[in-house]
Length: 188
Length: 423
Image (cartoon, rainbow over all chains, first blue to last red; front, side):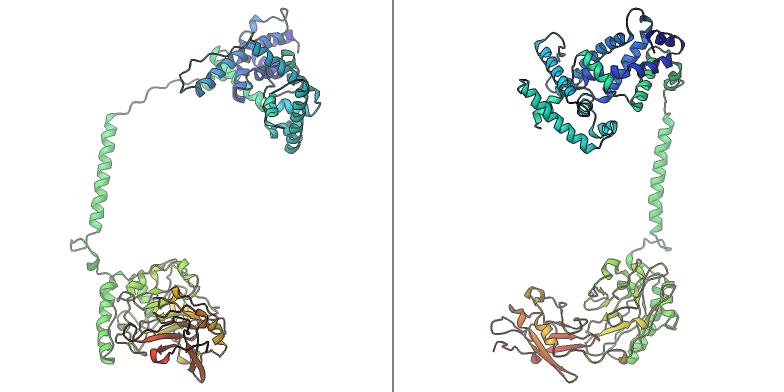
């Protein structure tokens, strides 16, 4: 479905437009959200955030016009900002939980323009490049296990493998990644 | 793979946008269930925020409610009802505890099934006094108040061809060996004995004591595989020397059973009296009827195996018996099995104050029915000792032999000598 077709569908049948949005961009939104809050939120938090993004896209649908840019970029932008908001909220919540006894003033983590953040990003990107180089099914296993935070049996079901082989392959792949990272100059 | 390698993998986030897009495209994460969940959430949120989605709105809008206010009247009514119930309960308990005369009943004033025993006791007293001087009427009138219901009692006597009215007072005479007192037994005590299945279903040393004299020496040995779930229905009467005793186990409701494949010489029930006499009831003399009542007859002398099966080889098994001091010291009921037939039913009861540090030196031989049985205890090295007449409370009976057929032999101090086996 093209962007203009979706725009038309939004006018004629909003519910169907929703479904189409999820089918077409759901995975992208999900990945964007996970990329931000994967380490601090639960799966429910991720789904909650995804649905928030969907609603926001839907609510601001009239602001979108197919002529001004692609729907994908429009959704990605909303998703990124929403994910950052969610990350801040979740970090605050987690800090509130852990530091509830110390009365420390919570300082939201800075996300942009810091040296540390840049280093982190560079490392993550390098890591992803190494994961990509592993080939299949090791790459899939690592992505599902560490990006999507899926459990072994879930991965086994998705990849139609046994849990044992998923576990073994994951272990070998991690070992390989560790070696490759160290070869590339990474030191713990 | 070390822990650091594992931690590294957690850094697989915060990727560049194009990498995320690649992952989303190659590795889709939204399955049907997730899609459904997200869609549902979207609909809900959309309905809340914009109010545009009519479908979901209906499901989550609640209207027409008002704050519930409990009326004060209910509280008073509930308190009053609770008070009435409490007072009623206490009153009814109090009324139930009162007898027809208006007095609060106590243990000693209960009259119930005692009437039957009261009637019969007079007759029994008369009969017993005419028959022998040494006989004592032993049926306890006072305690019969806690007997089972009358119908159970009459059932038990019914099989003996008697009725409630003509049943004589059960009185038991002591025969041999003579004791100065007849056996006194008390139905109530037996009836009230808790005879649980676990106690009965096992070795036959389990026994139920009865009688008024502190239950000393009077006990009934239940059959090996007798079981009942209605312990209160277990009672007995028995006929001996013209007096009547009936035995009954179980009831209509109970699951009492008597084995017909008892490998212990068919002895199903043994009554051991205070004077040492033993009465046995055999499988063919005991029958449980469909209504739970029990029929039986007493075995004649020929029913017993009058010849003890002891042979010289028995000495070996006795000598091999380990006889620990702690088991013998002060426990009269400790017994040592002997005999060639798997030690079944043959046992020797040691004297109360016998002690030895060399248990393997104990042996015996004794003369009976042409067979010689010698008894010897202790050795030079052992510290075996025999009690004197002064300190033996059991009339110088130093050792009791109980045979498989139930015969009991008493050995007195003069019959027993210490022999140095090593010489």
